[in-house]
Image: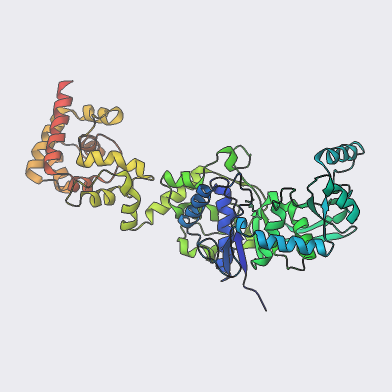
Length: 473
Ligand code: GLU
Ligand code: ZN
């Protein structure tokens, strides 16, 4: 039976997801979607001290926000579940028993001190430190003696000697490891808690995962995980190790260093499509130059275009995709996005007007808030360039503009024609002071729609205020 290509994302809920995690998750998701396969979400929460329910909820919300819907996982249980490792104790126990029964694992009673001495001796001899095998052949009697002394064993995997392990990494190509370089490793801690290697590999196999994409920091785990699955007679997935995502300083982005978390980016108003478009180009070549709709991303992803060099986080590129994402929002989505940053609707569809005016002028909702005052509130006193524009034009210009307004109304071409006839000003010399008087700023939405959106009385009083302010000086 051929299995559907199945990928997974396996976060530990010990913090918020950062961009590096998001890229791993997105690539795994796109790999599955591109092949018409399955995407599984598994929660690696065996470390009860560092894991929390709040982090888990936040991670699930961040993944959903990014559009990474899972086919199986929390909230979508199926026969291969449960999908939280903290609920899979019985499955782990059964496989520990089997490994021990079949001679692939054995209890080890060595104390930390004993192991530390062995490590020092090996290092002194110039050998790589590894478990010396002390408890490998401990018989029933030896065990009984340790148990009688109240010692609790770890469970160790018996690494077969003298083998060469070869496999193809999906990203890094052929890999080769010698089992003689791998010491017998721990599968279960003395307090009974299963270790990462074990649950991670076993669950991938039991959940039908065919392709694992994960951070390069896990490459060294792969030979041990393959040995383990071989001992259990389970099929190992193909592994692909993604180069780390590094900051401008070249150091890896990690949640511990407080790198931008997805949650933070979202709170700042980044749009999920911007993040996804950015990540699609981060260490992955060949994506089109232009915007890709989130639903079409998978069609532009190919594993053989994932690079091996570290990928550099560059916020200016993220901003570029944010600009594109804003451009591609429809009006309703734009209103949802900007809405929370705007004051309550003052009525008469003013908010909708504001959204329409601003959508090509702001990258983040916070930038929209001052415009609410410009349109529906009191204008803050102009300063800087805007103030200079007012004074350059002088009171005569604004007196003429007021007269022109009474004649022509707020239609910009007609109004501009009248002002030009009265002042001889045209182009920027005409529009800049007008904008400064009406908005107190030199930038912003197009003047025509802005004039159309402002109440006539507001236009009048702002022109008058500009005349008074510049006449006074
Ligand atoms: N829980 C592990 C991590 O977050 C998963 C590693 C893997 O993807 O295999 O690093
Ligand atoms: Zn031992």
